[in-house]
Image (cartoon, rainbow, N blue to C red; front, side):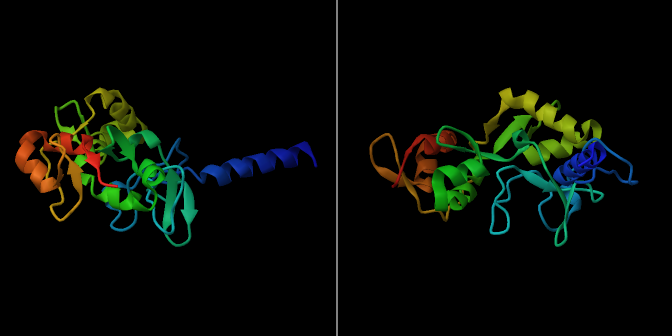
Length: 207
């Protein structure tokens, strides 16, 4: 095989791996932009999107302007930065959806849904306490797709979850309180007040 043919195959391999990077007017761009709220259906923010048709080890999002990889059924998409995905407080630390799946197996999705109250938030320059989606919406117009991720990373020291957020009262799980007895979330909230979310996260779970 000639050197030229090898080079062509290498170029084609790169294109296949990352798709076609193009902007609003079809111009070449350095990276794609996630679709964000502009997409009514599908997955418009960076995440793992774990379901029957998607179980990737890398997070991904739908993209604007047919940038990146293409799917006949669902349009364009790209892999995105794992740093900027949704995380929930669980077992003493923040975890993403893939970690929930690996650690909790078949119960991962349910546990992920039921820790929605403990979603990670970080502080933006205006003092606002934002989820990763809200944080992106605040910064992306001025900083771009890569710039807002850098801002999110820099704000890591302000990472926390809202202990005062409401929890799904229909959840019947019980956890062990300091007195050794087992209580529902509503009972935790009634007894611990503003510390309920933290105490719930730290408490021993039912097997």
